[in-house]
Length: 487
Image (cartoon, rainbow, N blue to C red; front, side, top):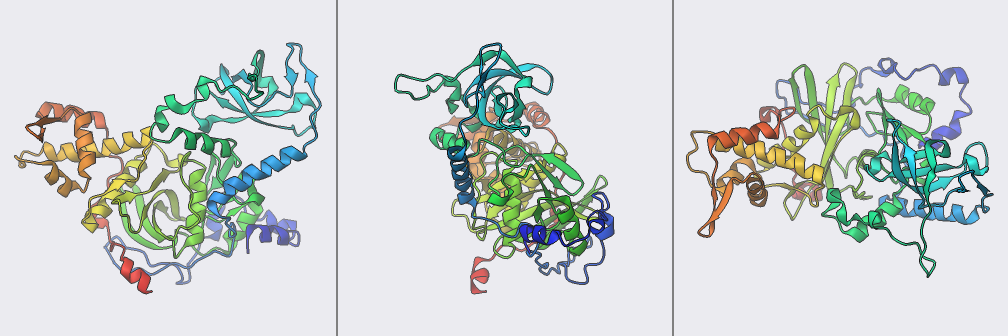
């Protein structure tokens, strides 16, 4: 039954039953899996794995096509504007006409109580009614990332600083230099026109908050959820099945029925380090389509330029979890194509905000290369990389390469040798060593020039490796395309 179906049935449920389970009372729904869940890799290294049961019948079961959702949202907003009655206007003491037009620039108060320049991206009637003074405005703080865009009211703005949108002789809005993304280093590798079109479609966050397990997280970006969820400010996710609901009572009812306390698929890694037990599950997008699609829905809330695919069949998802007595709690994930002609070993990567700055992002990158080593293939992340993505990868490449170069037992080392040992693509090795000024081009060949004290300096600057992956705890067989298609 979908979340919508749960909502329809809800009226027949007594109120006392709806409020029986509290949010923090998840222990009440834990219990034996009755032999239905996947057998997981034990600490002793058992290789026996079986597929976990699917719980697609609950929650966000009716996932809409991925790319169509963004267009459908845009069309719905356009139709809504066409049906809207022209707003009643008024003029403030500062001479500003309310409601303000989209594109207006003004100084607005931020969390630190300081005023910053913003641009009005969208507007809507306030909850109190159509009064011009009650309108809410979705604004972009021009000095900050889009993830900080939010809804504000005129009480948080300095109305003496209003700059109305300028129009040219042809009646079209003038484009200001600050609207151009050519200066945007974070998205330097993206096509400016495609970037502008993407931001137009996804300019307003549709979901403001999500609750996943014991964590409530403010979202950063738009995600193309099905239309019936467009106006939900908060969504409630089951942290084990990733089904999502409009109301907490629906989630609690789902949890009472749920028997799965880890991601579907096979557990391929588990290790305890520094008091934390970490686990990886491999989930096939073809076998667990609903789980993987819902995972992409969540990921898009925190990734600005992730491309969402309706067809997740071609991808494998590697889910990182923290393990405790209550179950397996999703920390983050990365995905990779089952068969990549370009040799990509990672397509998308995300650490949930509640688990960031704990070394898990570095662990995900490291794990993707451990899989490449197991496959015996050189790997590289899918392009383009954002500036933050490049910094993360360059840190990993630096640590891996320099740890080998500072080994006194390795007297002669070529770029090809480094690639064979680390499974890092030669182009990535060259760019990293050039960035560190450790590579010279002499007589038609690259020469590595790395003095011990310089290597030590760069290793210190690269930082810690995060949560370390123990290759000996990885129990995994590489994907076999022929076997999959024969099935």
